[in-house]
Length: 292
Ligand SMILES: Cc1cc2nc3c(=O)[nH]c(=O)nc-3n(C[C@H](O)[C@H](O)[C@H](O)COP(=O)(O)OP(=O)(O)OC[C@H]3O[C@@H](n4cnc5c(N)ncnc54)[C@H](O)[C@@H]3O)c2cc1C
Image (tube, rainbow, N blue to C red):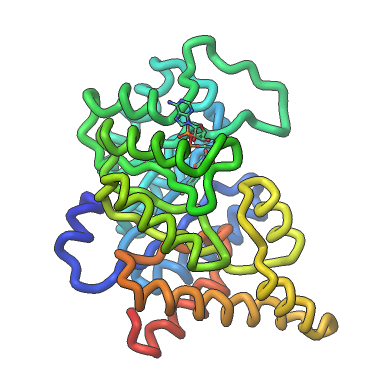
């Protein structure tokens, strides 16, 4: 089902989970267990990332295929165009189309950090170019990424929104927002989008705290602010209690999601990092509270 049709017809907020393809056999076994636990929550859809430069092309395809065919889940396949030629882009997307994929999220991606990679000379510089290329060629329901705190390379938040508006004008039908640890960033972002005439659904991304190291690393990459409230809450935890951080992360995310749901968001998109414990805890708590 096209995700926009789902939002148009469903009277409750959607729940959805982001996954990425496993990079080792051990990770694959963990991912399989996580998928079973997450699928039991009956999400409205899941999403699968795609490594820039085509680095996870095969793994992403296999994961999407198994989620659709073995688990019967609706999937948004992310697609990052960085480094790929127009021919490679159509080759990847034709495969997804043949699989019955109806929804994609079109992003630019970033230069891979861990290896020498030569981008194709005809690869696109921005997601706007990708949108212009895709829209006339495919009937996918296409979404794009949005950044409540501004994209890390953006010269200003206003300029960033101008490009986001351009992506919507080029045919993007929904936006998935990067995560944030203060809902005020998201509410302000939505208000500014609406003020610019961006009227498509904007789905907030929620990143539970899994470990301090991961939180710092990811925030450093995407520019998400680690708020004082979050830092102080973590600093007050008993370091000898192994489960304390996960429980704190669940509590923090439940409070965040409660605020988002009360504000009427179309759904919650949880960045699972291929783990299930926190997401299961969060969704069950929100369901018990009658919020989902
Ligand atoms: C929900 C979500 C999912 C993601 N999934 C993936 C994934 O699967 N794989 C992956 O590799 N990465 C993924 N990313 C990360 C994303 O690829 C990076 O954040 C990347 O740096 C920017 O992608 P973009 O599509 O926003 O790029 P763009 O829209 O091209 O924006 C990048 C920068 O360029 C500016 N800009 C945009 N258009 C123009 C233009 N026409 N001219 C000049 N400047 C412009 C923007 O303001 C911004 O500063 C995801 C991000 C999010 C939020």
